[in-house]
Length: 617
Image (cartoon, rainbow, N blue to C red; front, side, top):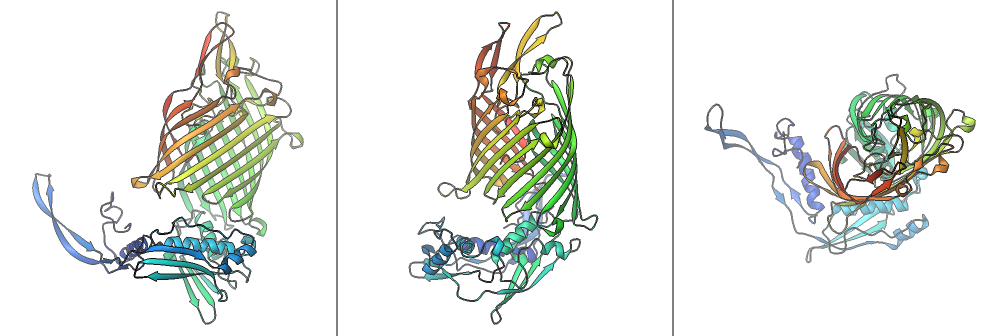
């Protein structure tokens, strides 16, 4: 029960200790659904019985005394009925043949083995999977030849078992006669209909309706859409359907918190967005985001459905400042990078899960080195106190996100015929997937991620700020820059003597992988046991003419850590807060002899506590 829950924190402030008929009806449907999904298909939930109650209570102010606390006592009668188990779950030959004709694998295995508890949720999920296999793909959703799937349930009252069979429906498809939208005040009817794939005059398609409502919910301007908000009235005589959808708007203006894991630690920011201010369905946004070592200011304008297509076009102006501090650097923040420019991304959704994007960025970066420490920076001489670099880059990216699976590939190039002083190629790829646990904990899940990043110069020197100073965003427990090699640097002291030290040199090729087992805890908290593995290399041939003096034994070292992480998503803000404890099971821990016969101890921490904002994957 979620609506009437006086035992929850701050129940009186959140209105959860008050009885209303609407709140009870919502809870009654939730209770009935729970019984039907846990082996009780014949469960019945009666009306609530409400009575006044007086409970003794002891108060201490202004003096200890006994008093009575008046309130309501609510009892809900439940008739569960007999407990049923699945005897068999099968599909007819006609249904399997229809799936083969569509070129899809007809074999669908249920998560619940034979003998498991009856679950209506499991039946509905399998029916949607079969519909996805026999119906047309997204580009053909409006075809009148789309098939439907019906479910046949047979209950045996003697041994309390249920047989479920999926079959291809012989009845003609229902045609959508009318779609009605309720609750719109600030948003236009056209804005909502363009995002719902279901159309009037076309066969009704549950998959298209779910995909459209999910796409609408992702905009963030509407409250979550529940099953009770959707009503479908079927006319069996004419085989038509009327669909009504009730929406609750959040508003056209919104301020929210944002956070994530950047190259130099976690960041937190504020985002303010205004939608449809110019009556062109445009999105204006302003973002201020930063951390201990970075700051980003961004102003953006985005428009969906550009030129009458499904594509979206955006324009943003940004200003970034980075002052990294490395724990093993003798001078602390030995350089400061300031970037400003414009970014124009164009995105086109290929399917409901795949999107293709192009990106053009025009920027100018100013890098300053402290006068006391330019000799400590590998590849930087005394004359390189300040450098300015202009960049014009063009990128191509592909993203696939199904909710449980995410794949990303991006490639960009700067310089050459584009112009500018930066001539580089950057590539990145990431793949992640989540599997529900079917063995140990039903609510648990396995999560895997692998990522790759590379950058190199094909003409001229690679800017120092373009190197990858990866740390705990890939392997938890590492400091920024430790997922890469160290470089020996020389420094002239005040007495004229030359001293040598070592500092992180960054990397231009980084690969990492993570495996987690996630399980929910009370109060919206989630725990995860993780194992991270990563490696960073600095390939001198990719740097151009300026090459640092690397400590070879630290280049390409495999790092690994294992530990546990706790996550809590802040209500309303929806920003996850992470705290972890990691043990570096594979780490660097050795001494190096430098040119002046001094020793440098390169070592990672054996264990570390850390925290961050946003999810890693």
